[in-house]
Image (tube, rainbow, N blue to C red; front, top):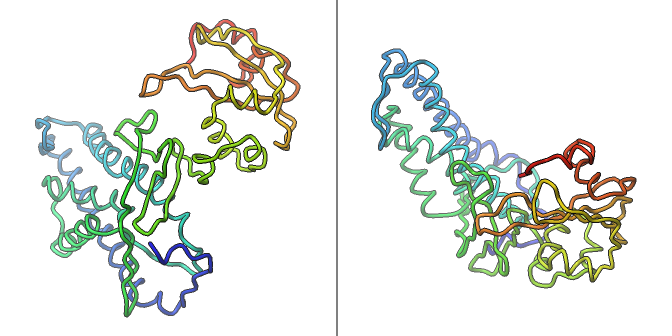
Length: 328
């Protein structure tokens, strides 16, 4: 990763993209098309025979067309989609923030492609689909590369390969049906490389280092990114932030949908650039660690009561929100 910290723009001749990168991209695309066709054919066959081949760890069963389709969707969701969320949307997006901008279309491969590799490899290893020899050979190469290196770029005369992170910290993503992960670390970088490059993340949100190491009310006031600002406030705690920033409380009341907790309505802090108000609430459900997060919601400036503000966030009147038995 040592060459990825430059601030200059990397320009790559478009002529080179017609060579090795284009051939590799075409090879990958053609292979995926063939394997997708084999997978679709395998599921059609399973439905036509009314007997699904046993999935490892699951007993065989007789199936309808809907069941065969559901099985395909389950495999797709549990492998491709879940790994895509964890690795491509999460880790790859974070590492990309360390890279200089590229001029022209640049093809890269690596661990962020693991969702595709794992998906096709599962069908191959389980015997649910039989691929052509050239596709099996390519899968062998890709699985080896995915285990051994980070991102890589291949050109006509050189291949650039990046080291994998030395540290990677995650937490389970909320409502993740298939154990999707998101980047998070409270007091240190979520991703670290051997050359000193690092990425900070707070519950999946990529943040600058100061949010973790030196969050202050002054820095929060200067921050334009709403999500970064929210993370910084959560780092120092809403109670501390409200006291230090001098927010004026407009109204507070018991939360009828969250017994034992209060709704508090505050003025917007100076320097935030918006004429809005903040409703401070406690999450209706617990986190995986057993705690309930406190967070602030922006509401319109014309709302004068905490109950009306809570109702507004649900698109209902405050009097209707007051009838809630429980919110989540």
